[in-house]
Figure 1 (cartoon, each protein chain N blue to C red):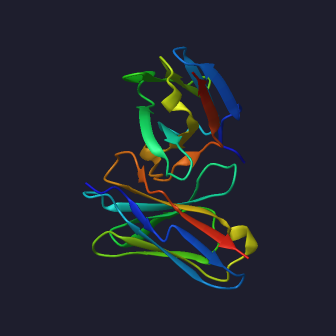
Figure 2 (tube, one colour):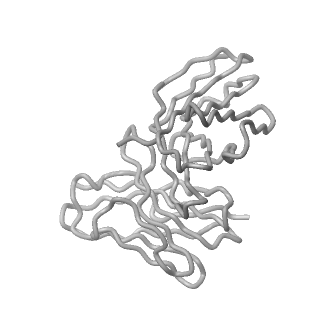
Length: 114
Length: 111
C-alpha cells in the first residue's frame, strides 16, 4: 500500500532549465509535506516543506506546490544546476492527527546536464 | 554544530545474530526516529522516541526494539537477524514539529 508515490524514477534536465519533480499521495489525513535530497553515501538532506494550509512555498531556487484536491505536490527547481543532481524524496506526515512518522516515496533521480 | 551522527558506518552480521546501532541527535533536538531504507526504496519508518519512550511505531516486528537515553541519544536493536534485514538504517532527529534531520546511516549487511 504505497501512500506516497513518485512515478518518475528518473529525470534529466539541461543546466539552467527548470526541473519539475512530482509526487502523489492517497491519504487525506496527510497535512505536512516535505522534500529531501539525497547524495550517494549521505543521509537525506531537508530541502523544503509545505503545510496543507498553503498551496505554495518558496525558498530560493526551490518552490513546492500543493494541490490538495488532486492530492499532488511538485517541486520546482529554477534554474537547475549540476550540483542539484541527486535522488529526491517526497515525504508526508499527518501532524494534526498525532502521526509523527514520515511516509516517503521511492524517489526520483535527477540528473542535471552541463 | 554537529549534525546527526550514527555509528558504525558499516556492519556485517550473519543470520540469527543480534545488532545494536547508535545515534546522537543534532544539538537542540530531543526526538529521534529510525528508518530502514532498502535498495531502490524510500526510507520506511521503524519507530520514534521522545522523552525516553517509544511514541509511535511502524510496521516492523518485535525483533526491532529501541531505547532513548537521558541525553537524547538512541539505540536501535535488531534480534534474530534475517537476510531481509540488510538495508541502510537511518536515524533522524527533530525538535517539536520542525523537519527531521537525518544522519548518514549505518549500512547493515546480513550474510
